Length: 204
Image (cartoon, rainbow, N blue to C red; front, side):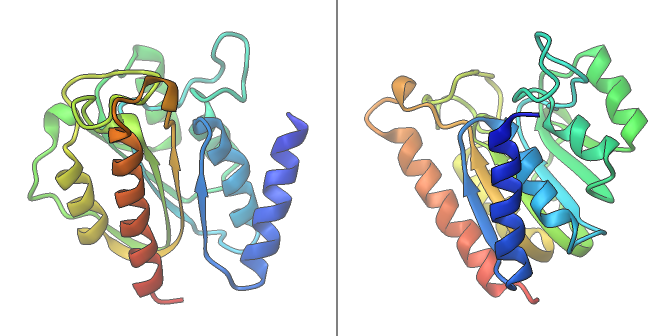
């Protein structure tokens, strides 16, 4: 495991045990695994809402078990979360489908999404937001463009409508070298404010 991961976990764990809520900014999606490790000691029944174009459930990707394509496999195999709900997925391989079944992940692929869905969680909730869950028309500054995703308004509505006690969140996969006129940065900043508001208003 990368040394940086241990340092991330230790820093998050310190904040969580002081009663603080934590929002993390990536970086790629690999950071979610060490961040969740930092939450797990206090929140043993943690729920995760994962918004993404990709399932990030590979057992290993290009020989790396800790890559950006693997964080939720590590999280679920170590039982760091009791429930994983993934929405917006639109590049699901047969391996990732098998992994989702193995770990009991609840997957709502983008083709099956409708705006009347309201997600509800009992217990503490963590939201992991990969910017490529949005359509590249709204976020060109990501490394992996996957057409057919959410609009900015849809993601805002998901954050606002989701029921649960939000204790932490992350926003990942902003790639400024691919951004156009800071469009993606502005979307990320807007979603950051929405998550901060949700964290502030959640109990606990």
